[in-house]
Amino acid sequence: MENTDNSMEITNDNEMTVQQAVSSVVSNAPNNSGLMVALHPLTLLNISEHFTRVRMQEQIQSPQVIGAMVGTQTGREVEITNSFELAFDVVDGKVIVNGEYFTTKQEQFRQVFPQFDFLGWYTLGRYPTEDDIEIHKQMMTWNESPLFLQMNPFDIVTSKNLPITVYESIIDLINGQAQTMFIKSQYKIETGEAERIAVDHVAHTTLGEGGEGSSLIAHLTTQRNAIKMLHTRIKILHQYLVNAKSDESFVDHDVLRQIAGLCNRLPTIDSADFRQEFLTEYNDVLLTSYLATITKGTNCINELVDKFNIATSTNKPGGRGRHQQHQGFPNF
Image 1 (cartoon, helix red, strand yellow):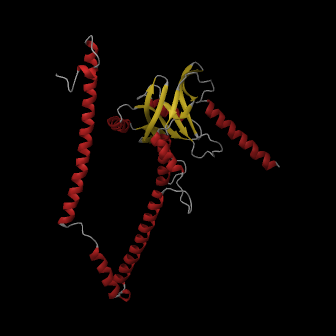
Image 2 (cartoon, helix red, strand yellow; image 1 turned 30 degrees about the vertical axis):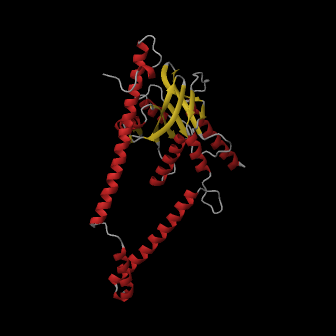
Image 3 (cartoon, helix red, strand yellow; image 1 turned 45 degrees about the vertical axis):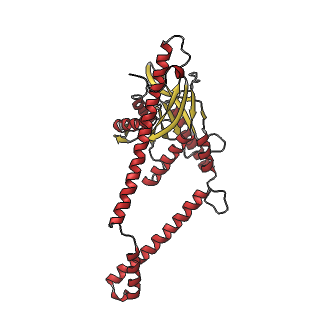
């Protein structure tokens, strides 16, 4: 009984410590900002993939993961559409976000999605900490009031609620000093038609036999098994050649002739035919890229013409619409 009482006391002490740590960075005041946050499934899938990939690469149970969230904002309505991971360094136990990497990634995103802005950042954890506050202050360099999304991948989900929490930042006076704190914000999941199809595809993906998995997963699984079997047999042949080279008792000229025959049947990549086919495919890819660039430029010119027509049609009285007044390109 004494051991049980001691363990209960330790658990209660830990819970009190956690509550104190949370209360120092998260405000319990009601959120009256009126901000409406809409999250797209692509953002959540990116965060989950980022965590899983880093965890498997570094073989760490709880890796440090940081990323930026982008989207659009109209008044008090925020729509988080996509995200990308961020590079950072740990100096004296503090996380320092790589500003040059962030700027480069943001410019790349704006080339494809010019309407997307940096709206906030994400990380993993059970609750916000002082370290998150320090990272949040760095994010204020690119957005004066960024959002903070925290995902808890170790939370056991027993309801339909996702293990994520969205926070806003506020400035509160504590002991006469201004201090940055988090305050919880409401969010909703917003999906488009393409996203609903993708999420349904992922949700019905099963690897078990007799499941309702997609045909793509079954096809990829078959290819994976075939490549794995090929790799195993190549290792057996390689090991045989190594043993035959070191010990003549392993030499079997019939087997060696069969291996040599297999090697001679493999297509060579140094022939003129291969180089010609490679250059043809390479030029086709470049041509596709150039056509996409031309299409994008034509679209920009078309938008410019429409804006010019609207601007000139509003300045002429008695006009019946821009399509009747202006035909084709304007005369500059």
